[in-house]
Image (tube, rainbow, N blue to C red; front, side, top):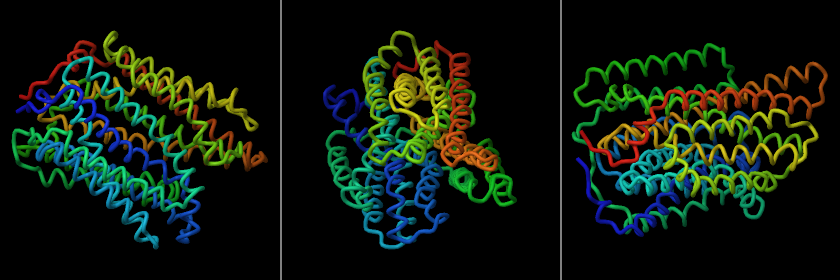
Length: 483
């Protein structure tokens, strides 16, 4: 069934509601990067070892990646606004616990709870936007705003993390979420439509939920520990094999249960499948570019944390220019396929420029051109990827489709970052063994990773431009009808 909540809402209130949703999502996106700048301070204060320190990041990624799909389904069952409020509440309280942590265990546990809340918010926010905006032009503009928040929030997090850690303490990279979270909850109660769940059945596929969540969490666990443990060790391969087995059990269950968590017929929807493959490739390239370029600027060029954040500012401004206006106009004029392919092509070119960044690089000649191209690419492509993923499903499955595409982005980003970071580390070790200086060896490692990331983005551009169905993509802009 569909709801009429968005129909009765005044148009101006819809845009206010969009701002509230984006503020909630921004908190989640910021938290994936804001903590990285504070890690050295956390390590010293709480006496983390190098291996244990990684769990400040990994605990968040583990629960975030594992619960995205279940969060989307629960939103369809019990109402998107209800789950959004629950997710924001859990995330805000977990942020308070992180900021007040005085031990390693307390911080890691609180970070895992943060990931759970973040997964729920991310999974249902996109569905709420699709519910609020049914007009083609308005939906394209709204998705552009959402895309800018998702694409630009990471680099804003690095800058904000540097400022807060330098001027106050590492605790404030978490405590800053409190006033934002409270404001989002209060505004959501006034502005978001209190619609019931749109799922046609109240049944929750418990066994499917357990197996797919366990499979995703185990896969993320294996990926984020691959660098420390070793990719070809018995432990890593065993964890990945177990994740594949659990996923196979999940698919077997979904083919037989009466009301599946993920109807397998979704995989017959061409645009959904293609956009998720493209999303995995693009996230793999972009996650790795962001983290490795920050390391290049810090460890090779000697930039301070705040300077790294400022270096990302041009890309943010370009993303804003395209995401908040130009991208929507391009989608309305050319559909989804061409803007997506062109955007990813720009991103591939930007990564190619970074693959040539030298040991003694200069901002204007070696960083800024690639940043600008990546800003254009992200600003143009993010909106079409999301629209394509949501194009073929009705309101009763919008939360599920949102969970699927966000899971694809999360898994692609985690896998891409781990693989390309491992590649960079291996290449650095080879160059060091050959007698290169530390800075030159690091540079060579980063260059290799950027080059492979460019190949990922280029492959995404080719697949999106070749396989997406233009006619269905255009139809995606129209209000979907549940069936």
